[in-house]
Amino acid sequence: MNMETEPAKPSVQQRFWAEMRKYAFVSLYLWVCFGVLLAYESALLAEQGMMYLPYGVALIKALVIGKFILIGEAIKVGERSPGPTLHRIAWKTSAFLLMLIVFMILEEIIVGWVHGHSTGHTLSEFLARSWVEKLAPVMVMTLILIPLVSTMEFSKALGQEKFRALLTGRE
Image (tube, rainbow, N blue to C red; front, side):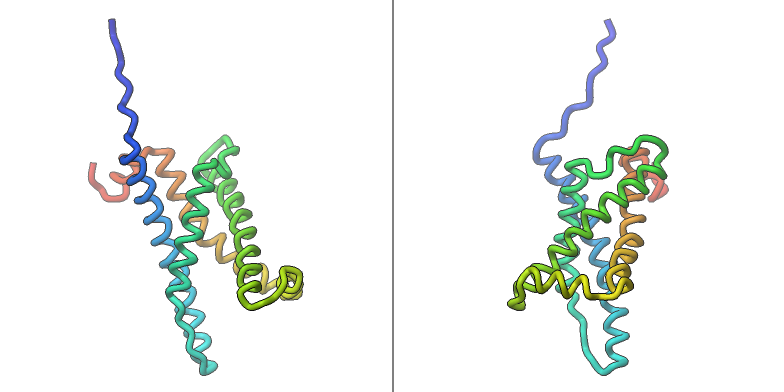
């Protein structure tokens, strides 16, 4: 009688550390992306005689958005798309983007509250912005999400060990 053994289910501690590594990877990636954008913004503002380098804000934003992305992964945001990996990447990127747009609007409201503005006042200021001012952060977030989601999907499709071996050249 041939009894195939199932691989042992990871312990809670192993799952915790796996999630922490994933969170660190996502947050570090986002922090680098946001840091580069802030450095560019600082360079542009320096031409106008203003100093602006809030890398701490970039870190906090990366940690918060990283956690939102992992929560989205845990609740299977964008997992509905069957088919080729490219379709899953497009679908999941769109789903995460929608989730982050909601986060961006909530962030605007919270910043408004910190500055003593009502939700209505903050939303009316947000809606009064030009379409370019509203679209630019969405486009940037899309460009940041595509490689992140692609990496996550390729890792899932190939398996973590095979994906790591592919990246590092070690088998």
